[in-house]
Length: 170
Image 1 (cartoon, rainbow, N blue to C red):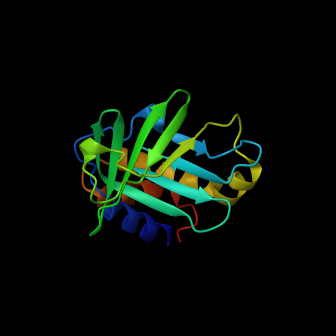
Image 2 (tube, rainbow, N blue to C red):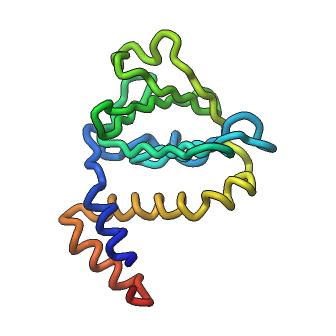
């Protein structure tokens, strides 16, 4: 079973254009909205994706097919007809993000009236969010390490990794 899940995810994985290293390292990791004692949301940024995890409501994941710098922003663009974008930039010790309208040109970010979200690092992940999403975020991190390590055809790479790690053979 795990073999099929990994194969499907890696074969469907987007190729990152223009920025082979993906989102810059300082922008990656867990970011929290509001107060660290009681955050209302978490943004988890990896080299090739961003996941918005509110305490209540639906989570959203954006896998980037294109990542580029448009100073001062790093812009990740997703797949699909509307090509959703997430613009990120460091601001002091925090992170600022915006989801620009499809009509806003990259050189005009964030755009008039755009909603800008402010994020901060917390000394420790709040227990409620870690318990709810920790396993999924760990899997996303592992998936991205696999993508980075497998530079050739995905099938043989996945087969070799699964052969070593699939103890139960399911």
